[in-house]
Image (cartoon, rainbow, N blue to C red; front, side, top):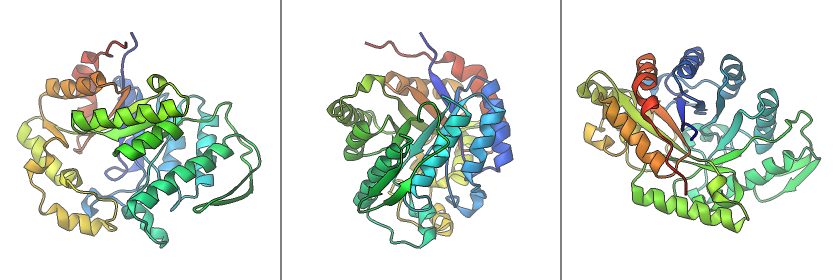
Length: 333
């Protein structure tokens, strides 16, 4: 039975790009099998301190590692026209065949308001997202494409640098309607940790959409990103979560908030109890392994782990030593 895919989450809100290259190499050396890179124009809070251009970095990480890698996630239609994302994705897949995936989502005002357009409601953002997938799919054919819809216009566009096979498109979904549409229109789903009941609902709708599109949902990747706070003691793990990743303790929709400074003000009200069921704060590596195994047993095929602390080397080495070797792929029916 194949070992489960445990990935390292490279968080551009917290670290300089060269440091993330170094952490990614270290992650590969310690048994991580894939990378997921966030795409931010701004960090969540000013204190996090970084927000480099992920698309420049992706070409570099393909050179310095041999891992599967992709975006987790990028938003078409605001900073990026979907034609540009299609070109970027096709180029990376041509350079690194079979290794790149395009992870996309509906976006957040934090990053996308900068171009000055009207910021739509959640439903309209979803419509725009799935319209963008149609544009990207058309361009992945390598043919001359024209497209005219409510959201996008494309005039006689063609991608000349093409991979042998287009990269898969994974969509970040956290609600039942988008999960069903993801199953129908995408190649896989990305979500975050939630209650078992919610996960079951999302996956049922994802499977429904896939079957309606004539696809086998059992063959489609199911990806989850988990936030953890690992440190030598529980007290330190709690303290670093509150300090370094306060947005993880904000249990409300964040898609309409525009500025890191606003998140910074909200961070003053975040308390340790706000992270319950949102960020695992623990020094016990057995707890970390148990949480990941639980999500593998729920049917996820790839788990990407983000340690919210600055102690990335210690986290990577500890996971490589004690967590990853303890994980098992569940038996498939």
